[in-house]
Amino acid sequence: MPISTKERTELREELVGQGYSWNYIDEWQPKVTLYRHRDLKNPKGIVVSEAGTKIVGLPGNPDYVSRKARQGLLQWPPSDSCACRWCGGSKGAEKPESAKGKRFKKVGPYHRDS
Ligand SMILES: [Zn+2]
Image (cartoon, rainbow, N blue to C red; front, side, top):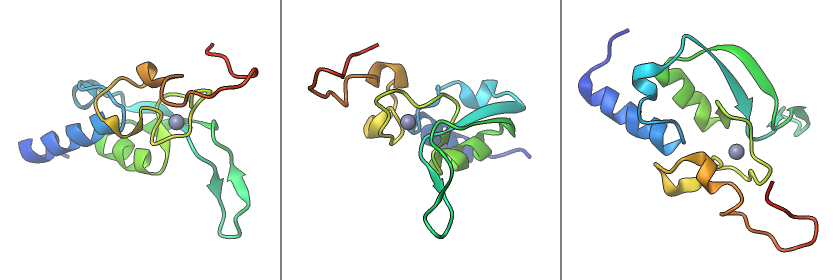
């Protein structure tokens, strides 16, 4: 389904804000693997699918992955320090990797950057 240049620009900006690369909209794959970045709970509040769950074979359409990103499903596994929104935080265009271990600094003997 073709989309207008304006829609494309908006979608690109949204994807970048969600941590995807600038080129995603040009280079997307028909099938992708998404990782859950927050627990999926049923209406009773019971976790039915944990954060970190890998889901393979989903469509890679930019509009689809953008919609899924809003539900906490992204193409990279949650980091150790993932507290999501969404690993890259609300800073927008920065690479998610650069945020790892920096935004969620914790003090304590058990916390190490790995
Ligand atoms: Zn995350």
